[in-house]
Amino acid sequence: MDSSIAQAQHIDLLILPETNLILVASVIEPLRAANRIAGRTLYSWSLFSPDGRAIETKSGIPVPVAGAFRPQRETAPLFVLSSYHWQLSATSQLKMLLSQTARHREMMAGIESGSWLLAETSLLDNFSATTHWEDFEDFAAAYPQVTMVRERFVIDRKRITTGGSLPTLDLMLELIRRAHGYSLALEVSRLFIYEQERTRGDLLQVPAIGNMRILDTRVGAAVKLMEETVEAPLTLARLARRVGVSARHLQDLFKETMGVAPHEHYLALRLNAARRKVIETRMEFADIAAISGFNSSSSFSRSYRGHYRESPSETRRRLKLKN
Image (cartoon, rainbow, N blue to C red):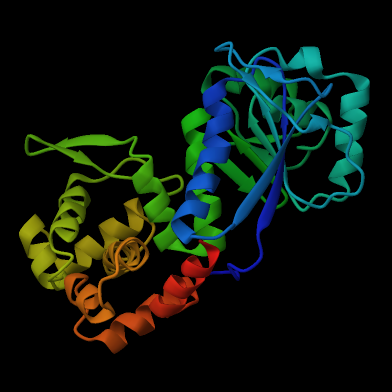
């Protein structure tokens, strides 16, 4: 974990008319899931529209907002969401508000077509950025001062841009990983299984973290073995032998496709499984340690505290007091 989980991160969302409902969900739902899994408020958010009226999404389902976007000196990250006809909202007043609030915000994100509005307001000048693949060439021609990158999302200092709804989900997983560690990001991603790879005739569902969505079949097979052997973890050598590669090669493949070493992913799986037992059952910690592949309660407690910044007993005590 890179930061304390005690302080909640607040995010403001400016949603433009005709935004896809799934785009809004791609930002909010991973944050909600992170709160649920952690058993505490890691994230909060407020929704705004240009005029304070509910947003009519393209699906016809309105999204209520807290009010009109009238920022003062807020420092929270601002996400600007748009899908269609962003130009209709790009009034001189809104662009002025965005320019003013950018002086204070720790970060600003253009989500899908929201990147156009940021560029139009000169907030992407001299930054790297991306946008929806259909608009990539037009965007690059319209804003030569922006360095366009063909990626699902781009994080460049205080600016973030994404290329669509699923890339936005990728982005949120990456932000969760950076703030709260790989284990939490992995568990959130497993709630939103949206990658399906066929391996040896089986349907293997594998979550993606960050920008890595294309999974090598050998890594996929290794991940499946890890999930099947949580109670009795395999050594790296045995794992590699089972999928037909050397241990060193498997390490390299994991780094390339998952962004972590095999043992980090394995440990995250085991700890997440253990945490679910800690939260959802009254099992003894020694029993949870055993079924999660730890050889002692003390080693389990050390790993648990290292990942979650609290002991298993502190988790149960905190959630009991909360309820």
